[in-house]
Amino acid sequence: MAKCIMVQGTMSGVGKSLLCAALCRIFRQDGYRTAPFKSQNMALNSFVTRDGLEMGRAQVVQAEAAGTEPDVRMNPVLLKPCSDTGSQVIVNGKARGQMPAAEYFRYKKKLIPEILEAYRSLAAEHDVIVIEGAGSPAEINLRQDDIVNMGLAELVDAPVLLAGDIDRGGVFAQLYGTVQLLEEKERERIRGLVINKFRGDKEILRPGLRRIEELTGIPVLGVVPWVRADIDDEDSLSPRLLGQGNGEVRPVDIAVIRLPRISNFTDFAPLEQHPLLSVRYADRPEKLGEPDLVAIPGTKSTMADLLWMRQNGLEAAVLKRAAEGTPVLGICGGYQMLGEEIRDPEGVEGEGSDAEEGGNTLRGMGLLPCVTVFSPEKTLTRVRAEVLEEPFRGARTEAYEIHMGETVTREKAGRPFSVLEREDAGKRRTGGAYDGCCRGNVFGTYLHGLFDSGEMTEKLAQWLCRRKGIQAGEVSVLSRKEYKEQQYDLLAEEVRRALDMEALYRILETPEKPGT
Image 1 (cartoon, rainbow, N blue to C red):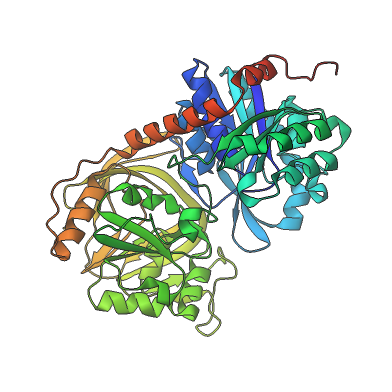
Image 2: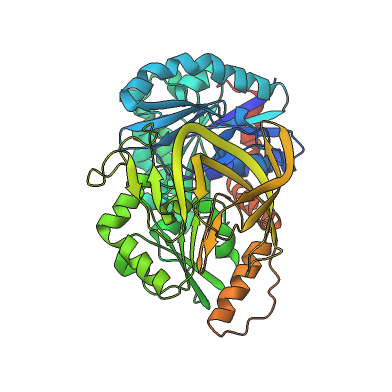
């Protein structure tokens, strides 16, 4: 069985996911067959595996860093919030329905056998498992029947690193308070403390490092600097979504609508990488401005988020831009919004219907001649496709679909993508299908990751530059895969330099504290 190490945090957002990705890359560089594991993840950013199953993108990133194929066993439980108090529950890559938080809290203990089966199966095939916790182990209201922090650590006998976020301030209080709120047997599992996201002179920290070691009896294994590596973010609290773009003045301005339940916003990460494109996120009409392209991303709740756009004026602002000739692109839920109507006869989205329009039907934005009908069955598939329509004709892409229901065009309209190959549940089908809809300057598609191959990104950049009268020569851009490999190496280099790797390897070899 594989050796393991678990990274827990003092709170959400301390950088656990990136620390785990760095460790996955480090162990891979050192010659170990490595896999990530997170028993339960809550995120709207998800991914379709080659066998047609759904998992959280954070573990996909970690698998890529480890140099292994993403596998749903790495994230056996995924919660996709569909409201403030409920989530869609996905187990081993397949949806088991929606549950209110209280119901799931009672239900989750039943998932332990499946979680352990996934973990043990991975451990039998690898040398090292890097386990990520969730939130904080000191959330004492959630300690009972815990399946993701100390409860899981005990089940798989994992030594723990506890990470705190110094960028938010109060890192010593974070670490000390977390340790003190744990039970004695839980404290004994913590073999090292890590201070993350440090900017400044480490010498200034030394008195505090010595004192926190004295107070907790746990060594500080490293102070990790604020790493500049560009790694895909896990959720909508990402700084890139909360900020105003990639910070550089670039010729082309792309505005992405920041929906309340935005999902798979990593679709736009390749555009941020391009030297001619500036990507920013807008959640109010006044922030939309006059961009060169408006993009409406995926969402877990299409109807509710369209109502939100309608009520705060963003829908009207997008319609105005479209009428004036600005290109509009909708992906997945954004594509559904662009159509004439959205129907939910079986209440799949629940709270999204418009009382004024009656029933479970919602008027769409009317920019594309298509209608979406939701159904309980979820489409999960990998796709290779070629673009049929200008200005992207001839570009090929590898992408994936995650959506409920189907979208059908009402009248003759452009079908931008010819599906060359579709792969789901391990079965491949070739040719004979089309995806998306386009009319004039408005485009819609179900294909997540359509810009990852690079061809679509370059054709989009050249087209938008021509529309602005900018003479933009061909730009050499790394493929998304090559770019991510560079960034994983950069992340690993910084974290390896910051951590006491000798001590970390000793913990792997002897997971129990000396004398316990």
